[in-house]
Image (cartoon, rainbow, N blue to C red; front, side, top):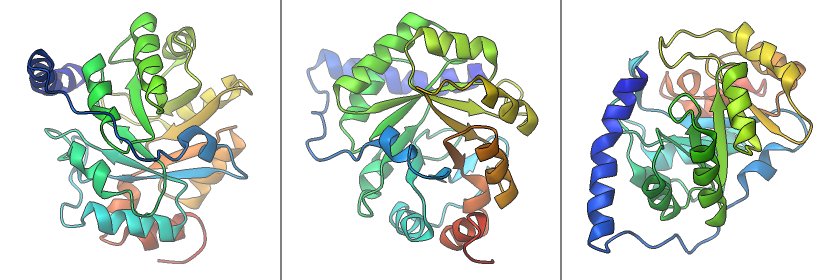
Length: 257
């Protein structure tokens, strides 16, 4: 799957390179960017609620709910931040969704397959407070460091995703400060919650850690908190069913579905 994800982004990178040659790259976003990493380090486990229309593992999840509707529902439901899937081919996302989800004022994470500096430039032209970098996609610590530093220079945080201890070594070598441990193996799309939670013992106090994939019940959030995570990213469990706000409140134990 990783090679398919890389292939899906080549057209985007080619288009950005053409724009760069013509001097047509967008200017950086001039408005405020709520601090993403800081928001995750509050009291208790933070929840990053995701706007996710489809995925390779689940197929179509929900393409009727608008970005605006979901952003409002997540803010009311108690989300700390919002993850926005912008990949078009496999997840039916759009980069423009970031600009449509700012009204509630929550920090926005661009979740996509970012592997080129011009993709960071394109992200900086949106209101995103953070972007995702995936070690399995760019297993070069020097490149990851360059992309992270470029993002930070534009006022964004970089969330660096790992799957195992080898990935974690690369992430740390790149200077990553926000570590996301994905329970889903992007090569096979299989999920292992025990493997993800077991990585929690490796968390350094100076780092912010996020557990991702497979979270669908209050006990999963409790297990992530016990394992040492600062936050959990939840997407499919909230989007499936047509009422993400109610689903989020139920996940947080605030209201039954």
